[in-house]
Image: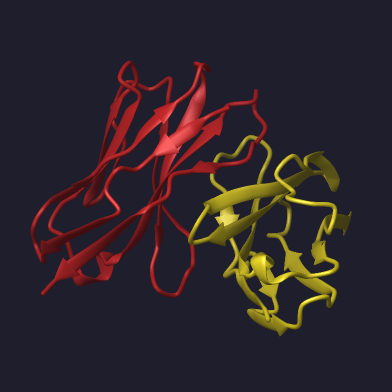
Length: 113
Length: 117
């Protein structure tokens, strides 16, 4: 398996623009997590899904952030409108029911200017 | 809510030495898992070792071992015979046990480990 695949690896956008980050989990995994990593706040859980259903979105910072999982092999994290303070590395991770380990993607480095 | 604290922002040791990274956590729950993740400059998050809270025996993976003290809520990572490739950020993480399902991870702020040649 190719592992968790995120795209793009890097994204630079202007303040006010819409940004969409994409994630393909490992095939057969039924949990998908979105995390954000910043220098100030470290790694934070934003939202996670089980069988494509959002379970806990309490970490989503504002209404500007939204996440979807239309099927078992694809998820998006959207920021609209983007702001400079959204600049961070965004990680997607997936795991299996009954398994413990979460497998992380390579992350997307987002820069909002 | 759970919290994870790593009190050492940065550590530096010579190659081949043994180093111990500290981690404490706070929870009112009894069933949970603890992890150490490594993040090299490539930024890939790599699982180093994990510990189930119900297990008294400390986990070991080759040169990596943990000292799990449940009563003290302490979970330190020992790296033996350190290598240059061990240079990375190390994150301690906590996950609640949810009856067979997964849960999100709560991370510490990390320790930047530098192995000097």
